[in-house]
Image (tube, rainbow, N blue to C red; front, side, top):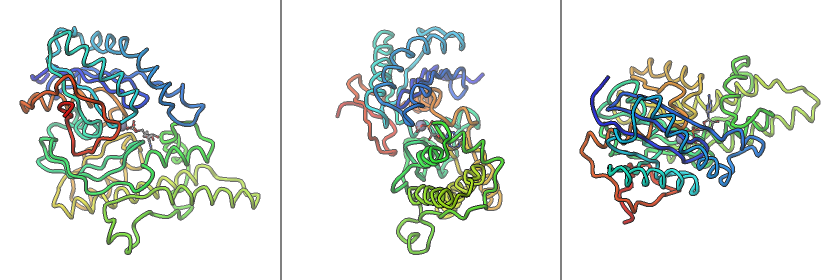
Length: 352
Ligand code: KG4
Ligand code: ZN
């Protein structure tokens, strides 16, 4: 086991109550309570329901994490919590809980950016981040290409989605195919029996006139509309829909663009490493195609295991532990939550 600070991280930006404990870069426990089933019938996360579920799950999840890690709260050296981006009410439950623990135990608190967590979590499995890397962040709320330096405090956005996030596109297309929410894992599963080249769905922002202005940006809403139109047309013609082929062809369109632009960003920035994070990084086809294209381009690929790709507390603890190791100034107790938070702001320090 590595030495280093014992940090407890709390994540409540969406529908997962995550409590993770790390020592240095060693993951001790990753406890997650999800309210996803309570949202499924609405086809999306209902903010009030999520906040209430966080309130109910918070104390039991903290207790479970401590007991599984074999530590008591008084052993913790520092607390880390997601300050944003995310659902305002959900974030408040996590930050209020973390502040209460920090005050009661007299320990420092770090209010961290959820998006940084999706990248830094990879250190728990693959060791320190390289000096500079390209980060491809693909979740339910975000899709961006980032230039990330090893201290993780220096993050520059190279491009982002102009409309839907990649995960959002998976969820919306799953709905068109009558698959349950959240749709990403279901499309991934169903697509395994389908043909990814069966239907030529569009690759957003890859035409030369788009590339001039949006080389590292993404757009998925046209793709979703195209899938919807295709389904409507086939149904009108009385053809039965091959769900596996639609899922595989849609998935191929998304991961083709993501991996193509990610590799191009590595080459354009002289970065030898690509780190993929966020819920969509759990996608098996994205992982396989990224590996193939990185191998071809001589780029080393780092992707956390699927469980650490989706929202969890360990990723927040990982950022906290990194900040403690760097001797970074903790946040003051008046730090606010931020439902919108630029990826370049890794720590929210104070109310400032
Ligand atoms: O990072 P995450 O857990 O939450 C946010 O910060 O948004 O990402 C959730 C998103 C959802 O849209 C979900 O459908 C997608 O990640 N997702 C997947 C897979 N697993 C989760 N998308 C494609 N394939 C998967 N295997
Ligand atoms: Zn996330």
